[in-house]
Image (cartoon, rainbow, N blue to C red; front, top):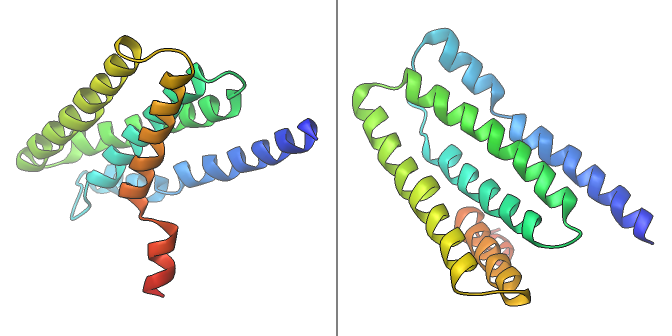
Length: 151
């Protein structure tokens, strides 16, 4: 059964990689036009935070190699997106994006790592971080039950 779960995990990772790469056309347009136009940076900043937290979770939880690798890839891709956004944004939007990036991807991520490393240990660290990752997913993407109610 382990080989089946690993196979399903690999298929899930392939799908996740494709999802991380799905905004590539948008960023090609930003580079080509040398402008972020009306695009917002928040989805990419939040996805970067989400990927970074899941990468950390995958690193500290034994047997979570697939979680760490696919989200590590996501961190690299999202960093490229945020960097391109910062390069081609107007000064006002660059400042706003930089502040949100600093608050979420540096401040919040740093605080989460520090707290889980210094305050909790062992299995509790993994549980707290898993709860944090799952909670962030609900905040970012909404609850599946809420989506069912809306339809």
